[in-house]
Amino acid sequence: MPQVVSIQYLRGFAAVLVLVYHIGHIMPETGVRFSLGAIGVDIFFVISGFIIWVTGRDLNPGPFLKRRLIRLVPLYWTITLVLALVTLTNGGGVDWTRLLHSLAFLAQPTDGVSLWPRPIITVGWTLNLEMLFYLCTAAALFAPRRARFAILAAVLGGLVALGFLLPAGTDPRLLFYTGSLMGEFLIGICLGVLWTTNKMPHFNITNVVLFTGAVVLLGFLPLEHANRLLSYGTFVALLVTLLLMAEPALRVRPVRLLNVLGDASYSLYLTHVPVILVCKSLSGSGIFPITGLALALVVAGVTIALSFACYYGFERPVHRALSARFRHQNPATTSAPVTP
Image 1: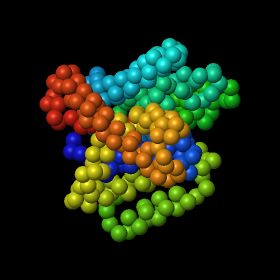
Image 2 (image 1 turned 30 degrees about the horizontal axis):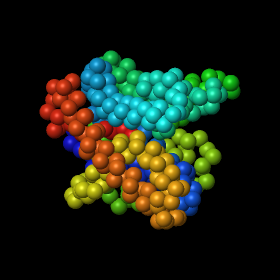
Image 3 (image 1 turned 90 degrees about the vertical axis):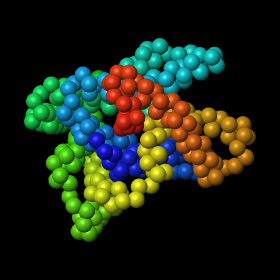
Image 4 (image 1 turned 30 degrees about the vertical axis):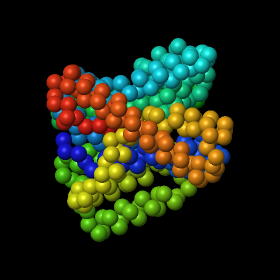
C-alpha cells in the first residue's frame, strides 16, 4: 500500500505529544504541564485501527499475525530485557513474573487491585491492548471477506459494552481489556472502511470548516472527567478524519522531517520514558546547568535524537532482516511499524 502521508505525520505527532506529557509528569521541575499530551495514545489507537484494516483486511490469519509480531516484538523485547539487565547489574532485583508478563504482552496489575498493568516498559500497557486487537483481527480473518468488518465491529463493540456492564469488584485485568480504549481501534477501522471504499469526505472548504470547528469545540469542552472514548476518542476521530481529508494536499509537498519522525515514532514511544528518567538523574546531579523550559527542550531534543539512533541503528535493519527472512519479501519495500 502506498504510504498515507497524513497517517505518517500523525504517528510522529502522537509520539511527540506523549513525550511532552511524560517530560512534565516525570520532571515537574521543568514547569511543563501538558496533560492533553496523553491524547497521543488515543491517536495511536485510532490510526492503528485504520492501518490494520487498510493493510490487513484481505490477509490470512497466519501471515497477518506474523507481520504484526515482526513489527512489534523485536524492539519491545530488546528494550525490556536491557532494562531488566540494567536493574540486575545495578544490584536491584527483577520481578520475574512481571518480566514474563511484559514479554508476553499480558496485563498484570501489580497489587491485584490496580486497574493499569505495570510492564517493565512503562508505556507497554498500550501494547497489551494492541495485542488483544491483533488477536481479534486475526480471528475475524478466518471469516469470509464480506463478513470481517461486521465481526470485528461486533467483537470490539462487545468488549466495550461489556466493560460498561461489569460490576465493581470484577478482576482488574478483565476491566482493563474491556475498557473504552478498545473502541478507538473500531473508530480507526471505520475510517479505514471509508478510505478503502472511497467514501472519505471530500477536502473542500465546507467540510474543512465543519471538521476543524468540531475539533476545536471538542478540544475546549471540559470533558476530562468523562469516559475516555467520549472525551478523547471523538476528538481524535475528527482530527484523523480531517487529516485524511487533507491527504491530497499533503502529498503535493511532503515534509521530510515529519516523515522521518513518523518512521521513528515507535522507537521514540518505547525509549522516551527511560531516557527522561536518565536525564532527570543527570539534571539532579548538576550535569545540566539549566532549568525550566530550557531543560525541557534539551530533554526533548536528546530523547528524539536517541530515538532516531534507535530506529536507524536497530529497529529498521532488524525489521527489514526479519521481513526478508520470514516473509520472503524484498526488505526495502517494508514500512515502519504502524503502532506505538
